[in-house]
Length: 321
Image 1 (cartoon, rainbow, N blue to C red):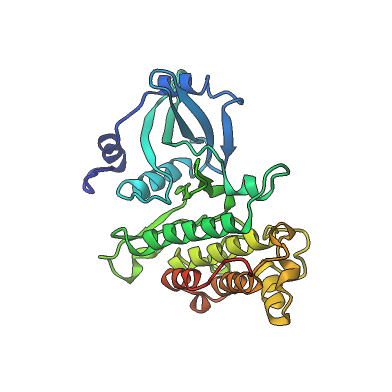
Image 2 (cartoon, helix red, strand yellow):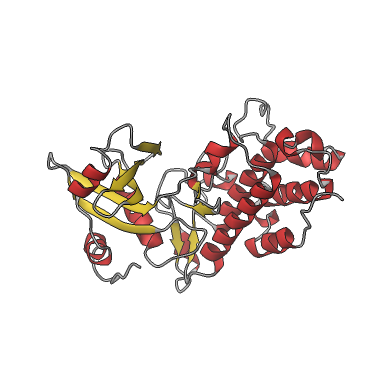
């Protein structure tokens, strides 16, 4: 998909590697980047739904906020991370725009497959639609497959650094796709042990999902993604965000779930929407245990992605007969 020469400067590589699309076409597809077309925002970008009338395609257009410090770096990080990877559980980038707008200002955008069912976050906290246990388990597995590919199967090791419900998008068939690689870090396998040293001074990730070691200045690592995955899993099972007001005085989503496991009270912390008279309590306990084992404070105590997948597929999630 992306073909770059490493000896060239980043902008030159980018220009060669991606079939460009004009600012004018994106402007028209989003009705002038109207608020009506806006479907999401993040620290460094705004995402619009774009309809290209010439071919009828609908795409998601991520426009980088270049006025914000780190915006250009986020754009380049995402391009670098996505240029050679493709997986059914990753959001697919179609093309990019590196141009100027009608006022002559620098403009950079990425164009993705549009995900009609929006983000996982929008489903978890919606008042008019819900995800049942089977759907949540399917999404949990999809995200695990994405991490397995990024960490183990795409040549270099890619650390996402910002795994959370708003960055997990659902297609028409409710298959989950991990997106937003603006904070991603590539750990080159052929380089030495310092390959993952981070030159950035900001804390990678989002409060509640970022592992505690990132706050101490530690470099990005696959175990950091595992921590975020564990918190994500516990959030999907309990229906509580890691920054929920009930978590105070040192209590967090991890300790909340770990205490329930130890006291045999898992069903009391599970999202009531997942409970029914035929719920398989052992399955829920197994899932909560995986979430807890992924989100320990110490990176050495966390599972690796291969173990997570074996645990997920070694557990029977059928309802109790």
